[in-house]
Length: 125
Image 1: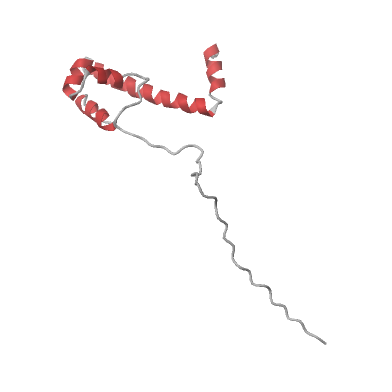
Image 2: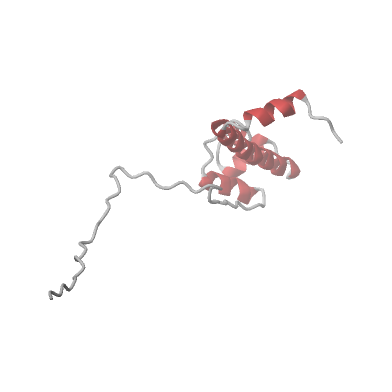
């Protein structure tokens, strides 16, 4: 069994913070896109400049798309690049694990119905 490294221990501790965990997950998504694009381009035998020419954009734009820190991917650009590389784009939107209720500016109103007073029959002797 592999012993955890100091980094593994540190990361596990940091992931307990929900804000950090969210940023870490989003960074991983950007990393996945960058790696997939670069891998497809290299497998096609194209340089960034050659791909850019076929897509109709600049080499710098292709470089940005392949950068793990870039978060400005547009769906239309990803589709154009994928088409040139003989691939397709699939976007998945999943619900969050814990569903958050929407925040509303107004407070929730409680509507009460009028209750009828119970009728009692009183008999006198």
